Picture 1 (cartoon, rainbow, N blue to C red):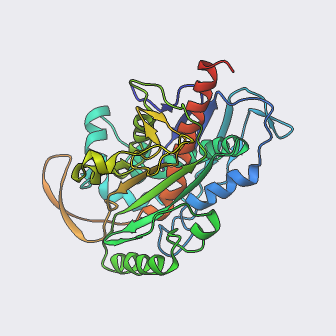
Picture 2 (picture 1 turned 135 degrees about the horizontal axis):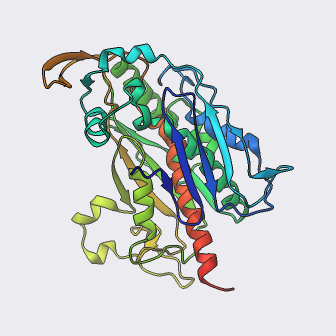
Amino acid sequence: MADSTFGTLFKLTTFGESHGKAIGGIIDGVPSNFSIDFDKIQFELDRRRPGQSAIVTQRKESDTVQFLSGFFEGKTTGTPIGFVIPNEDQHSNDYDHVKDVYRPSHADFTYEKKYGIRDHRGGGRSSARETACRVVAGAIAKQFLDSIGIEFSTYVDQVGHIRLQDPSFFLVDAIESNLVRCPDLQTAERMEHLIRDVRKDGDTVGGCVRCMILNVPVGLGEPVFDKLHAELGKAMFSINAVKGVEFGSGFSSAEMRGSDHNDLFNSDGSTSTNNSGGIQGGISNGMPIEFRIAFKPVATIIKSQESINSKGEKIALTGKGRHDPCVVPRAVPIVEAMAAIVILDFYLRQKSTVWK
């Protein structure tokens, strides 16, 4: 049985396929009587939508969200929020050549073996098109979190071998100042040139997104199995093409000694370093939550590759259709949305745990 629901108190259930009539979702557990800025929701969707620049897929979707329930006079009612996002620009014929073919590193083979059937048009349910629904829920969660002072800074810090060398908290204006969503303009220009060159070669390239969350209160997280970083990791790994997640010092901590890695306390309870990434014992410690997500290269490439068909016969496959040469510029709002969903969910869970 497929599981299309994420969250405990603040929950999102999504539905729809890449080339169906629409995608959509239901958001449960939304607190009532809260004023929502619908323009901010659409802004986040516009950051994720295809066709927004020359370095992403040219599929033209407005990604205009239509809310069906859960609001009255601009405020949340506390009842489930239902919404749909129509699919407007499907070129389903672009996928006729893979109807009986398994594309390398796609979900074609695994979906067909699991369900005995698959929608070959754009990958069906396995398409990253589904992530637009997450952005809607995340945009709503961000507005609740903003009201209690929690801020997000999420941006591209690596494309291929090019990496931003000074990670820190950046405002959205700096992040949105270029097509790559890297806040350093010189690094962003190099990244953009690399993406364009890779696209000309008929290939794709991977990259990394960094997320920083400020002003998270101490105490969020539900050990032992629902540790905050475990749930954030699950959220990130549920995003298409994610291959790795690290918190704070991450994998570099394997090379360190405890005397160098330990975050020593200041008198106010903050720490002089943040190798823990704002989470200790699975619980937020009041320091900025910092994590980094690695995305693989997009699996569809224009170069010819060897593959197999449903009969097990070897075939030569050349990718067609409209695809991203690098996923990370459009992944930024998706990462931020999933992080916001997790933080709000744990905030609500903490409120139900401690009576204050």
